Image (cartoon, rainbow, N blue to C red):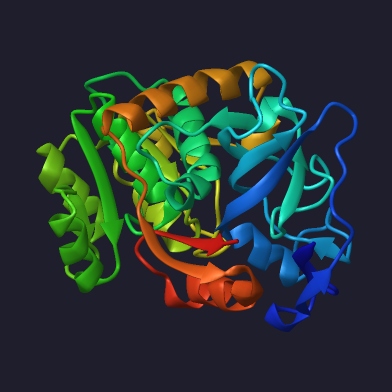
Length: 323
């Protein structure tokens, strides 16, 4: 089978198309014929040598969509279209390949009306978004801020919060063109930080109140600015650092607002939380209340180009490999 494998962790050039023996089902796993794979910043982190748990050579890819070929039983009959996510080491290998063996508990049936390309980019972003919101105590009527509307987490949190009854579902972008694109796609509460500070925009939208919940996947300066946009008793969840691993905060934003900061790691969550999150996401997908956005697709052999486009091009929406 064809697979894109990191032969060494030296950047994009370390990713090579190789021919490997076809994956064999074992240990109760389900064999999938891959149709599409979501491209995430984690793959770039691994290729850059900044993910200590990864060992080369390694087939990349931690989420995607495929068709069940064997091992699914009654829950996932042969021919079922499924989407999945998992940590490296849970799979026989990563998802940048034609065949993959996946644990049953990491699978979810793709709802009718959702194509495989869209489904491939759903699991990591939407599971992260839904669980982070739940852990932060989200309820209808709360105000949520999730910076970076064009990014996977910012967009997923914004869509979910809006669909679940948030009073305000606010996001941001540093790019005026993306702000206009967001508006055209129906996102009416996006702050253009090229023209307005993040905190000022949040206070404008909320009449001075602020955000009850911030889900930040950016880090860097954005985290410090978002912290200053919290409402009294609010909380900020940090779960990414595409904008930088270091930030500076004003501690009075915590003290006087009686606010809190917490962290989130998707694969540290209990299985029950995954089940609850999948149920919510599938229901909202089926009703059309949320809709994944795909910016561009690439063939499997162009995985390095896809990663470069994601990291350096900063598109509005997901990048997906088709197989």
